[in-house]
Image 1 (cartoon, helix red, strand yellow):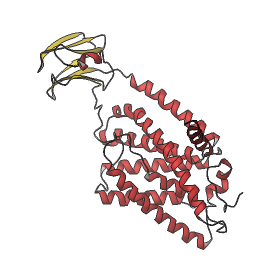
Image 2 (cartoon, each protein chain N blue to C red):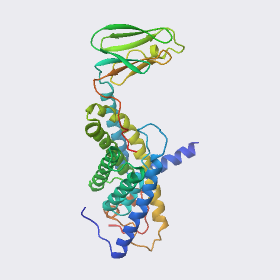
Image 3 (cartoon, rainbow over the protein chains, first blue to last red):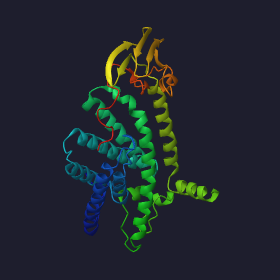
Image 4 (cartoon, each protein chain N blue to C red):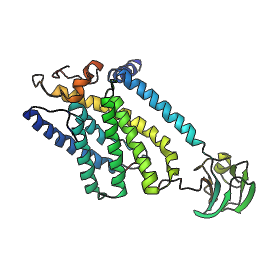
Length: 207
Length: 135
């Protein structure tokens, strides 16, 4: 994937470290979620996606892709579902979610974390149901359950968005203001989240 | 109470942009509209189950009446005007009867103590073989 943002060498190393931190956290969350008892099939919280959102907003889309792909691969290898239909569902959902994130970041409308998270969540669920209907079950009748599942995705998408906003605030608080380039990602350079109160970031360079 | 809900509202508003809020409302409207649209998809046939075994499938477009011996007594299944209903006569809670007429794909009326269930099917698998959410 072409990188749109290039950082000074120190920041590049830092970005790589952050990708691994976030991927580790996302993988653990992914595994934890897979052990949750049935709240109903459409009510998985999708908390692992919070880490992809953090990677997107703190760094760039490439970091979010890295976090997600590492999470899915290691998660499915651990659960023993690698290259099974479950993995296919997971992969298609995540790729759709990343595409939705990329779209939301690039449109000239100022969406915050919550809007991006909601779009990702809806795209994730839609892609999974479409793949399940056409590839796995092989019948479009399954699509009729999509709206019901989208209600769950709508709720969790918004919830995860606010959760990500909280985490992002703490991340930017935690890093000292003199650490100038931390958090001045591709996204925050183009979309001043701090103006929306979404991401308070004292160290960010404003455009 | 008022203060805490006000704090929550302030939190919800301060962490979202105007575009976020519009997008939340817009997507909710789209989902509800699609729910309305797909929820009323008419089924094609009534599948009758007794003791968890499929025993018969009847077309929804032809009026029919069946009386089956349930565990508690006779259970009547009636099909009329593209809808079906189940009526039990000897059940404690009469849930099957109170379900009323069902016509959309996936809808179910059941008398569990009698062991009789009917389900509207569209001639297609309406239950997911896999969860829509991956493990």
